[in-house]
Amino acid sequence: MTPIMIGGTTVAPGTEQRIDLPVARLPTQTMLSLPIHVINGHREGPHLWLSAAIHGDELNGVEIIRQVLEQVTPQTLHGALIAVPIVNMFGFIDQSRYLPDRRDLNRSFPGSARGSLASRLAHLFMKEVVSHCSHGIDLHTASNHRVNLPQIRANLDHPETYRCAQAFGAPAMIHANTRDGSLRQAAAKQGISVLLYESGEALRFDQTAITVGVSGVLQVMASLTMLAAPHQPAKGKSSLESRETKWVRASRSGILHVQTELGQAVTKRQKLGYIADAFGEATRRIQAPCDGIVIGYTQNPLVNQGDGIVHIATL
Image 1: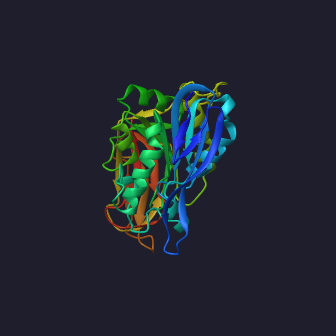
Image 2: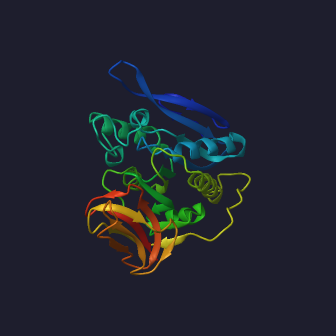
Image 3: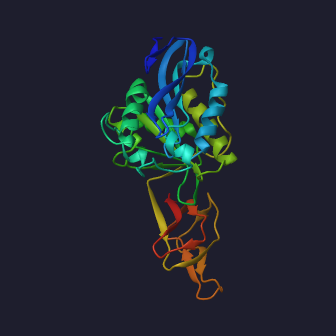
């Protein structure tokens, strides 16, 4: 096993180290740093990164990483674990998805050392974290007052990525193309297998989402033979696999009444709820456009025509 150097700090085999990597100063001149926890095992093995709060208001992943770190030690680890619980520390402090200039960090990779604040932070993450790794798991939640079923999004056509997605064991795994500027796209271009875990909602802890996430991360590590003592897989059904998802959109503006649940199997034309005015008049039925399972929906009852209101994964 070889030492790992991040930001000028060397983490020797069989040790762990907390590193605060300087990023930028606030207007008050207070320095903000990227918090990184490195566990370098005694034995050779894959290098896995865990990242959360790339969108600063997505908090479940922060707790998932904390609980995973409680269960992994250098003595039990083959390879290395590099954990970054808060990537977008600016958004985290402001309880915002974005950086101060309203840029989306997950549309700014691989970044540039001389670009915008988002671009510089993305570049730093790629250089100091991703470059050391063979695999990655990026932890997210839903946004915009929405909630998501625990799910893995990944390139299921890539054999190693598909194997890791199966090992994670989320209720659903969805084949998803990469988006320009995303961390997943930038890492995949370097030959790294990346899983994106989505579950729960912004600015809330969801205990189911956290439990599934912690178990999933440990199961992926076991499948990569990173853990000396294999983690016992969670009992239950295997992941449902989907190649396509569809949004049900509001056909009119009004007050939304959702009558479905996350993970519910639905059939084409099944009623999912309705939209009405404040008096309950002029209701408009919402129905499923296809067979599938519900993987997300909006929790804000005030909707405009064209808003995405229920997300369905086809099976």
